[in-house]
Amino acid sequence: MILDDDAWQTTEKLAPGLLAGLGAHPLLELEENPKIGFDALRRAKAPGLLVPGLHGGKGASAVEALHLTVGLGAVAPSLAVAATMHNFTVASMCAFEGKFHGMEWVILDAIAHESLLVSSAGAEGRSGEGQLTPKTTAHRRGDEWILNGSKKPCSLASSMDLLSASVQLIEADRPPRLGMVLVPAKADGIEVRRFWDSPVLRGAESDEVVLTDVTVPDQLVMKIEEGDRISFDEVQKVGLTWFTLLVSGTYLGMASTLVDMLFRHGKGSAHTRAETAGELRAGLLALERVATTLGGLPKPRMLLDALVVRYALQNSVQRCVARTIEVLGGMAFIKDPVVGYLGSATQALAFHPPTRNSMGDAVDEAFRGSELRIV
Image (cartoon, rainbow, N blue to C red; front, top):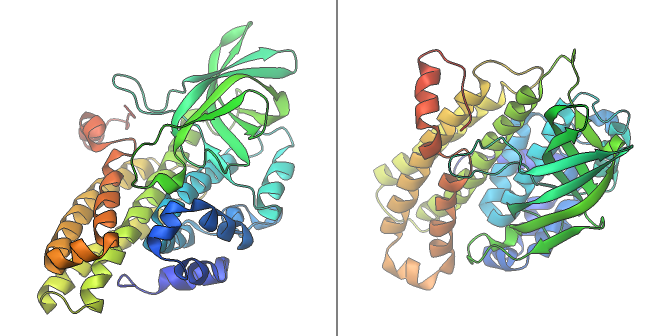
C-alpha cells in the first residue's frame, strides 16, 4: 500500500487476518457478494472495534479506527462504507455516557461479543432542511415508544442486527425533543425496500428502511435530560465528526489502490508517481490530525476541522484518481474493470452529507467567528 504500513499493521493487531482474508478475493467479487465481507468482519470481531474494553470490545483509538478503515477501503470499498456507518454509530452511542438507563452494558457487550452490526438510520440531507433534523418520529405510549418514518439510503439494510435512528421524541406533556433509539432489525414493522440502483457500491446494501408503528421499550431510547453534561447537539456533532473522519478514510483507501497500480506496473514518470502518492499521503496525515481531537468532550472547532480536511481531500482524491487513470492508459481501463470501478466509486465521497455545496455559507461564517451550523 502506497500510503504506509499503518493500515495493515493496525488491522492485523485489531482484527487479525481480516485484510488477508478479504485480499484472497478479487475486489469486484467482494463488491458483488457483500456477505463475504460481512462474514469476515464478524469472524474478526471487528464490529467491536470502537466498543470500550470494559464491554469486551477492542477499545480502538480514533487513529487506529482510521487506519483500519483506510485498509478496508483499499480492498473492499462497499464493506468499508458499511463499516463506517456501523463504527460512527457505535462511537455516537458511547458519547451518550450512559443514556441507555443501564442498558448500555447489555447493548455494547452484545455488539462486541456477538459481533452485531448496527446500521445508521439517522437524519438525511434534503433540500432546504437541516441535515441533523430526524425525519423519524417516536410517540410515547406508556413505557414504550411508537416509531414511524423511513431512511433512504440506509447502509447495511439487509445485514444489520440492530437499527439505530435519531428521532423526534413526542410526548403529550412537553415540546418535541431529539433522541436516539436502537431497534432489533427483526422487530415487527421494519421493512427493507430496494433503493440503490447504481451498480457502484451496491455491496454496502444502501437501501430504504421503513418503520411503521415499531414498538420500542423506553430502555432503548437515549435522550438528553436537563442538567446533563452534554447536549444532543454536541452528541450529534461528535458523531458527525467520527463519520467525516471515517468516510474520508474509506475513499482515501479506494484511491490508494488505484495509485498503487502506478508503482506496481511502473507507469508514469517518477515525478508523477511521487506527486500523486504524496498528495494522498498528505491527506492521510491531515486525517490523523483530526483523529487526535476525538476523545472526551467535544472541542469547539473539531467538526469544522474535520469538514475542512474532508473537502480538501475530495479535491485530492479527484485529482489523483483522474491523473492515475490517464497515466495507466486506455488498455488498463479496457482490460481491468477495477480501474473503471474505482474511478466511479471514489466520486461518491462528494455525495455524503454534509456536502460541500450545502455547507459553503456555514463554513464561511465559522471562519468569521460564528458557531458552525449544519445545513
